[in-house]
Amino acid sequence: MNGGAAPVRAGTRPRSVRIASGVLRWAGAAAAIAALFVLWPARFGGATTVVTVSGTSMQPTYHTGDVLIARRRSRYEVGDVVVYRVPVGQPGAGQLVVHRVISARPDGTLVLKGDNRALPDDIHPGAADSVGAVAINLGGLVGRLLRLGPSIAVGLACAVIVYRVVAGTEEPDDLDGLDAARASGPVVGGNA
Image (cartoon, rainbow, N blue to C red; front, side, top):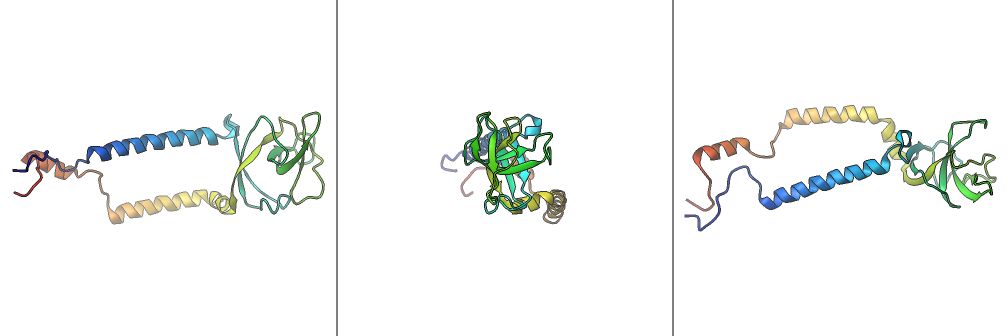
């Protein structure tokens, strides 16, 4: 016979592979939820803002086209790079500015300066004007890719369609083989 080997059905995966696959699915779902929580946009009540650098005031630290992810904080320290919104009543009101904190004033407002500037900013944003401290610099390439987003999405969709048509589809389990195995009885290991 088969020397005591357990029957094996066509199209099934070993238990350890099924368990590992399940664990990876749960870990992936948990990572996606954590990323969603961390990256939830400020405009929807989150603490994250994505900013694209424009100008030379923060060179050599940041360059035009760099994409920055800023996270809102309860307080900012000297040396933090902060994104702030120019307050109402100031020239450029509403625009976002990326500059470094050089000190805090007694009234709690911040004194900021661009790394490529000799003098501090004339504007001293308060907590309500501060959008967040820069947490991540995604660089300029990411900015260019994000601006091409719709084009890339259409290109990827076309590539997937072409791949599926040319290469066909492969199901994760061989259902035809499973049906044939059920019809003929269990398949057992060993040589007949």
